[in-house]
Length: 195
Image 1 (cartoon, rainbow, N blue to C red):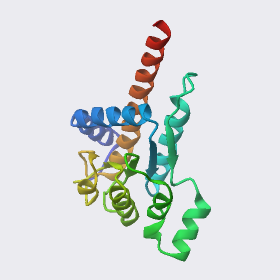
Image 2 (image 1 turned 180 degrees about the vertical axis):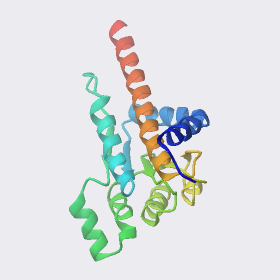
Image 3 (image 1 turned 135 degrees about the vertical axis):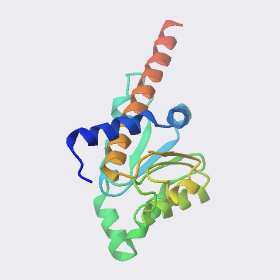
Image 4 (image 1 turned 180 degrees about the horizontal axis):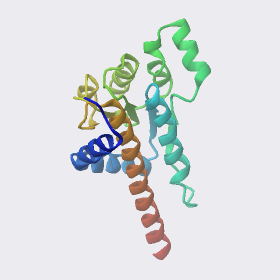
């Protein structure tokens, strides 16, 4: 079956119509709680998901700063390339995120995993480490959720089996979550100034 530009965008629109909005709302509320209690958020993934982890960390860390002094405590585990390659070389690629989390993760922190397939061994291992530490685990995936779904307290599965559409909508979801969080933070700041 040949995909045309129109059919690709038609598939994106159809998938968007089937998005689990209550799960996205749950992610917004959970991240807002992490913000309120100054908990760390660790983001990680491979390839395009690694790029999205960095992008989302930037949105949360800078884009929600509103001059009130309070900030998201967020770190993309994908951003320390020397450390990732050291773990990959000296241990296994499967360890690149888990070993970083062992150094930092604490109970009630947030481990936010991104994997289109939900089956990336290094992402799954990091989620296991986070769960053992008592962190809250969040997943952003596609297809049927893979093994990642069972390791997450909250898992958003893009209802598609097309990796490009999954990645498109992962970015859309993180932008929607960021936009909702920024609005909530600004609303709280305005209410505090008014009182």
